[in-house]
Each structure stands twice: as structure tokens, then as C-alpha cells.
Image (cartoon, rainbow, N blue to C red):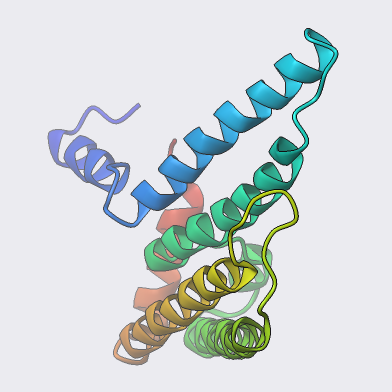
Length: 177
């Protein structure tokens, strides 16, 4: 446990909830209520509500992409840190840049595909009159914003030395929870 006041403040500020976390928290809470309702009606009342399964599925999709957005913003996506640790320190910058550029391209490509899917879909959910295009639009928006965050990280890494990047990645990897 950190006893140094400055370290404790930095650790606390890193763990605070930002505005980017709220959509995921709201979707998680809604998902929890829907799944409980589904479980209760199916196993205690022996009469399942049909719409809960479909709504839970789409809430989970929203949760995954909104949570991913928050993680991309913080730069805490899972990556193979063993490669960064085993590679010579001068290679930290190229490795980090290649990793971020690959992430940027992935988010951007998927965001564009999701946008086209949204534009091409005019169906509603089966159990509730809600357009699937809205769900695809949400996914497209989170992916495009993730691409913007990845571009900002690329810009940040481009202005740092390999040593600074290595130190930053090492601190994140060894940070106490």
C-alpha cells in the first residue's frame, strides 16, 4: 500500500469515475436489473418474460462498447506487455506506436463498417419496437470516438522518447490496485 501522500493522490485520481464511465455504469445497472428480472420470472414464477433475453443481449453489446471506450481513453487496453519488457528499451517507442496505429485502424474500420450497417438496417428488435439502427449507431459512435482517442495516444507517443514510453508502460503494468 502506498504511504506517500502524493502517490496516494495520484492513485486516487486515476481510479475516479469520469463522464466516459457513466454510460457503461448505467448500461451495467440496467443489464443487472433485466437479468435479475429474467432469472426471477423464469425460475421463481415459472413464466419467462420473452423480451428480457433480447434486451439483455443488446444491453451487453452497449456495455462492451461503452466500457471499451473508457478503457481506450485511459490507455489501459490489454496488450502483450511481455513484448515491451523483453524488447530493448530503444524499441519501446516503435512498438508502442505500431500497437496504437493498429488499434486506431481497427477502431476506425469497425466504426465505418458499423456506420454502413446502421445506414442499411431498417429493422426493429423482435420483442420491442426499437430500431436496430440505433444500436448500430451507438456502436459506430463508440468506435469512432475510440479511434479519436487512439489518434491522441499516437500523437502523445510520437512526442515522447523510448525511455519515457517504457517508463510509462512499466508503471501502468506494475501499478498496485
